[in-house]
Length: 146
Image 1 (tube, helix red, strand yellow):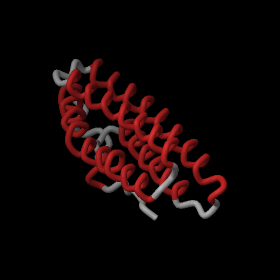
Image 2 (cartoon, rainbow, N blue to C red):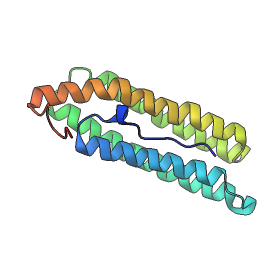
Image 3 (cartoon, rainbow, N blue to C red):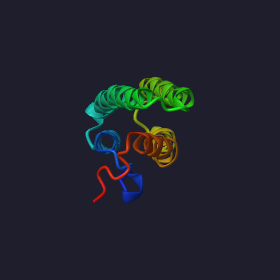
């Protein structure tokens, strides 16, 4: 079974954002577990339900992150939000793929590529840049250092 992992390199040093990123990883893993379920009769329904929870949480997380950026007047907000919006559309497309084709191995591969890999790269790049800027602007550079 595929899994996603919240590695130390994904810590942004913002407690709220890091907790939400961990929750996103958990929900991705819940989706992988649903896709790997032995119970064929309920696999599709469980996968769809789990994908819906992931989609809802993603929208919640992005709104939270975007509020942080807006409050700090982050200069690359528009570009960052556009990436979020595109990802929401990707997840909607995955939902359509799941309904049309079922919880196949090919679908799990697509989740890995379009959700897991995208999220990890987004956190390491775009999110790190935004949170670093927000922390420097707010004077919270040392926030959450362990």
